[in-house]
Length: 338
Ligand code: UDP
Image 1 (cartoon, rainbow, N blue to C red):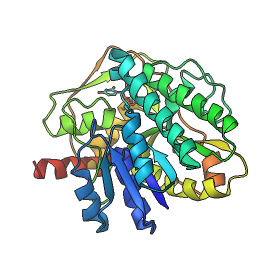
Image 2: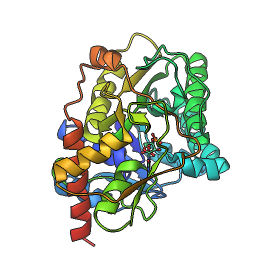
Image 3: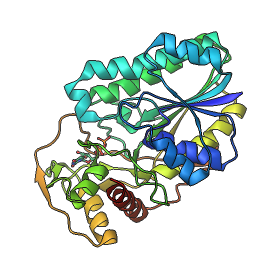
Image 4: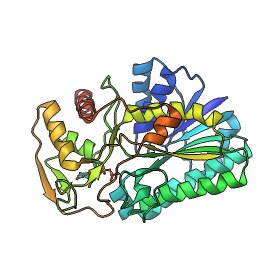
């Protein structure tokens, strides 16, 4: 029986492949359509672990391909990462987000039902909390209005899963609400896939520091926060990956059908604090400017992570400085290899 990792060539997916292999998991299958990643990720996973992962190039919104995969492989559990993840891109192209993020989930669930695959871990996001009045947010916090189509897809994804477990009594689901995953593998050999137009903060910082972008734009300096810039809970990607391995064991012994866990450090950090930390630990000076707010952004969100700590026995190991150091190490690795 195998574990299917969707989006395995992507940022969190590939770090999770590495941790699965390191923890001794054998039958791992990765699926990706390389829409926001590259097949070369698997060579990096092999360089770090010595293992070649079995891979398929499949678009999971295509039901026929999805079914063929379940036909060919005996899949016991799924870690479903494959999704579009950019807030601004989703504001510009909402239908692509609904089609991709929800279409793939529905197809996977349909195949789970048909092929008796009963364990699923779903990548959700802190964006489902919207502009929450209650901070830090717990899994019980009432969700405010999602601020972007991306956030909506994660909210609807969660709703679909809640309905699915009601209808299919064997199905077990863990929803992991990621806060802001950043940083790179400690070797510096794997990180966020390079993109010419990074939408997320940390790749934009590293590309600016590397001279690939002229200036970092900080979106909004007049929020009601400690320094006027938005607050997020940045968490090392390897800590997020670790939580998936623990969640897999929790899935098999869970006494309910569905559970939701926040994956954050619990620290609310401003955009300017991220920039300052990056400059300090890497001894660099960044060209940045504070500009208008970006559509779809929430002002502040950070996690109460005690449920994940209690139920998974998980604890985030890395601090902001290690996140910033490893992100820069990865950027330098990319520069050396291009
Ligand atoms: N951000 C920014 N400049 C950028 C990209 C992001 O100021 O080039 C800010 C963004 O407005 C938000 C924070 O950085 O306050 C984190 O954004 P990111 O896109 O990384 O993640 P999100 O929280 O939107 O999922």
